[in-house]
Image 1: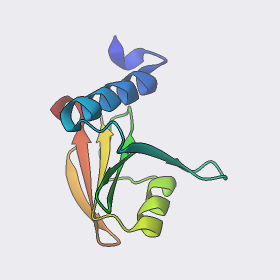
Image 2: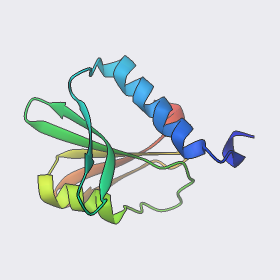
Image 3: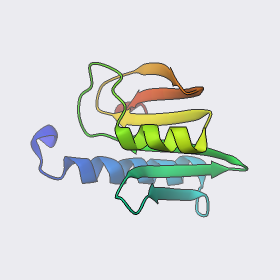
Image 4: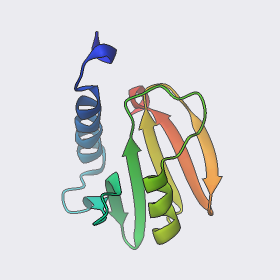
Length: 108
């Protein structure tokens, strides 16, 4: 089954990448973020002066857990909106003035 594959994280990340490119035509405005210490965010959409970070997690959530690297990006760049794409969980959480939306991948 899909959920038992060893490469589920890579498959989901690739799916999200293709949906972002198809939906938003982001050829020049889609990036990733990685620091020298290895902290990373999977995708960053740049719309004008606004940055929208997107983290992809191929797991089921039952609470609005936000990774340290995602919090670090939010604290540093102060985006208004951020997305965490996951397998099953919907929520809207406010952190440091940022709306963090948890979105199940099947809704993309």
